[in-house]
Length: 293
Ligand code: FVH
Figure 1 (cartoon, rainbow, N blue to C red):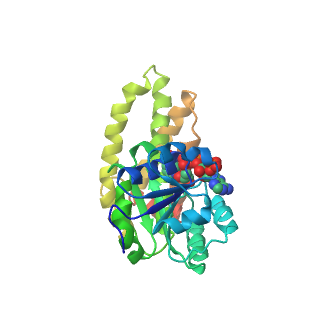
Figure 2 (cartoon, rainbow, N blue to C red):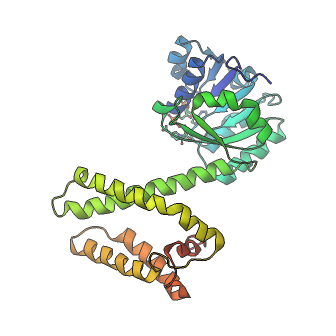
Figure 3 (cartoon, helix red, strand yellow):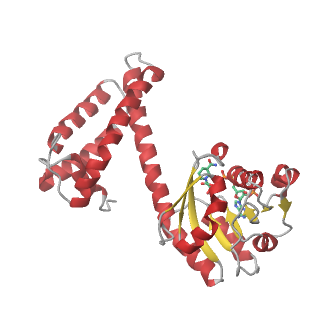
């Protein structure tokens, strides 16, 4: 399998991310074919040496590996579903964001048409593509990942997660949960402190310190979750629930939105009512793990 810097690649979708991906392949020395619905977006890449495919089918035949990076999976199905191009002989690597069901369906669709298919998730912004900071996750058949690993490595830090095509999307949304939870907690604290004249920049280094400290608890808490045993080594959930009440009361008293702390306290209260008040915080996984509409 040709997987050196001269392996030909195709990139379908030249939005902000697709342009960064194609530009990075070009800089790494890969003969790069590009296609985009709006042809004008290929201009800069063509000037830098990319070949513009006249049709999607032509792009699909151009590379041993075809990267797809469109708005969403619906766009991927609309585009590939409309082409009668043979998919045999190419490996599709779909870096479009979506959920795990969409990833598994896309894999079935592509494999039924003879393509090899890897799903992927980009956990980075376009400006860092091509650097180690760009974390890109892949899932699908391991031999297909290994066949193209060194080509993909041009894009950033690539990680293979497993054979289940849905894994990359699952990690992606799990990462989003982490990101937004940290940001929302910081915004809640910032809104509180601003009522006393403390600006966001003053609070930010303190918040960073707290967030880093809490992040350090994760491996130990993960052990509790994996073993299903939650001894209160540091603090019991009922103690944490009293502190949650302070956060709600403080927010209400100074006129700050208390929706988020109320939501978390409601989950803690349900867990305490179910008999878990004397256990440690990670016991809340049981509330997170069940659906509630
Ligand atoms: N940009 C980012 O920072 C993020 C970081 C993390 C992951 N993403 C995901 O990457 C996918 C693409 O994002 P993007 O930023 O490149 O998005 P746009 O600049 O809006 O470009 C969208 C491209 O999709 C093409 N497209 C849309 N619908 C269709 C369709 N029905 N048929 C063919 N192509 C379609 C669009 O074409 P055009 O409008 O230029 O003609 C663009 O090439 C996305 O999943 C992010 O979540 C990026």
